[in-house]
Image 1 (cartoon, helix red, strand yellow):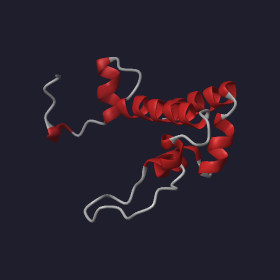
Image 2: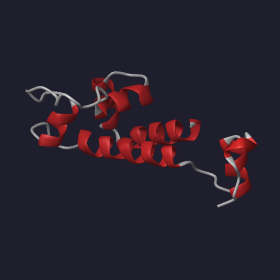
Image 3: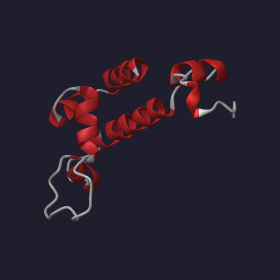
Image 4: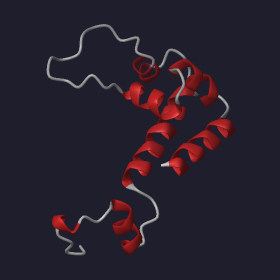
Length: 106
């Protein structure tokens, strides 16, 4: 877009400022992941998605798959356990504030 060569040694922040982009794609992805997690957490306990998120699925991962799981991303983003996140997500307003705070930090 700006025709900046890779040898210019420009930082991502300076390029984002030049393009006047306020939010990064990674922040938007994290926001949507956390919002969907909150949606799943507020559903009833016998839901398939909730069973998958909490890691109660039997079997082994395929051989070539990455060891990072979906709830590993959530644990890393929130710096808490998955069950603590499930408990926080029950209260919609508290969860909304947590998501906003985490996305603003990035």
